[in-house]
Image 1 (cartoon, rainbow, N blue to C red):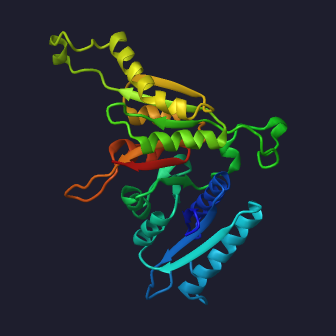
Image 2 (cartoon, helix red, strand yellow):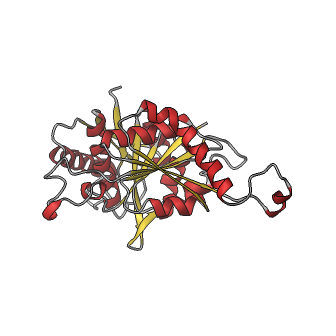
Length: 302
């Protein structure tokens, strides 16, 4: 199949924001955009479907309108549509299998910047074999860029610089897929990459171990060295990407949420693992998906 970025849409404002974000990403990657809508037959019409239309007709009409909107807003973009009568989670996971990237919408929390991930998006993110980006309603081109001079929209000045990409890095379990995704995202936007690594100090009883670094400058320096060593081969592979490192003692989720303010994209990882309760998101990914104010990319890795 033609290489593409997929977006799950459902006629909602957050779905439309996801479609536009996916369209911009497809343009950056030089690929097509695939709009996916899954619907399940209901014995009674749903609130979003007009009484004089079938669910299938409404889905096809909504896809056509969204497709036309994407082509009009993103000149030269190739748009593919796909409507399927299936459970949303299964349909979106199948779409992710065939895509470079899957983009989903997520509702803001009571008007406050952040995410309220529904059961569908949360299950898709936890099980997707490909990276998934969650975009909140209202996200637009201007949010990815710094403010243009004299209030001119970034749409009118394409060279308006992008905001930085933020990567959450765990040096104890670094993974190539996650790091490469973040570097590639920064390269495509010609913007800096900010790498955030948060660590916890040793427990009190560890002080009796003279071989363990003390809680303080020595421990901080050790983590800083680990971050530099982890990033060195990637900085060599992506020499055009300017990288800054933020290494601090604290909770990873809180540090990443703070760093994501004013960013174009926050990139975090999700370990691919099965438990008795099935696949699930880690605590850090779960927290940033609910509270980060910018789009969040969740990258699966071993």
